Image 1 (cartoon, one colour):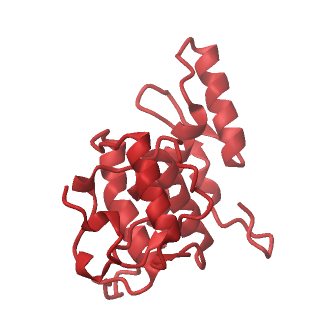
Image 2: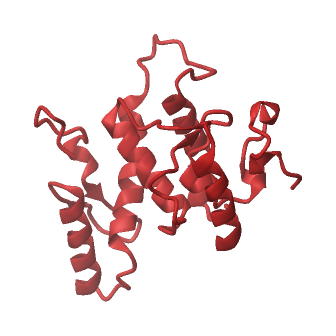
Length: 196
């Protein structure tokens, strides 16, 4: 994705895909081209096509954090201060579970009920600002965690200022995957205050 100055915010070496069954990696100049090349490779080799776009997104997302690691002399931040940092940490922790297939989702009816509550909540706050590669990576993780299925409130859900959850994914997850510390700060109508 080009930045406003026309400089790519995703390193060129990120557009490489290789799995354990491939003799050499597939390279491309952008994510869309890489997904198309992966699709073509699978067809040419009699491999089930699957979902090349998602496979490429996961591959890229799994490598992006290395471009944002602090230098060795930096002090690690234990308690991120900005909402974006809190959301990024929360999503990163759950990404491992999504990648391993360990996340359990609630019914669509329950997800929509939760989303409606969050959409009206004053603690639903915008978090997608600053660090474009971080936000882009987080959006990919949300897509993977929700399996591309969103509630009707997708456009108005942001992040929970109380819990640090990204709300489009949080409303879909079983409560055992959610952080409920600090729920006494949540508004009375918050579904996170309900008994499990």
